[in-house]
Length: 99
Image: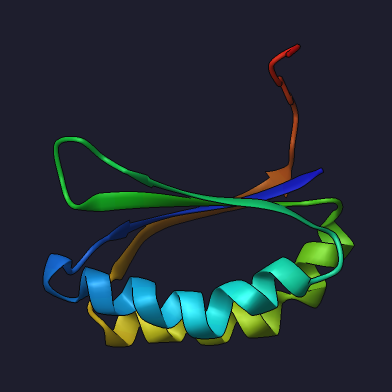
């Protein structure tokens, strides 16, 4: 598996608008992408920094989606959600519930 994480300082005034646009425009493309495993958005309890986690079957699948993801990241910047850090690489450990 291959994982991409990104931390952004979120413009809380535009968060609802951004989420709705993502549901209409970005999430359907992400869900339909070959090799897509999962997406998680984690809000920090103490700040307006959110972490997005994208999981793919492979690096090749993630890279095939890079242009679409890049367009969406530009939208986030336009809405005032500024990148703090990004990381991408092979998933080293995967642990899931045994249930």
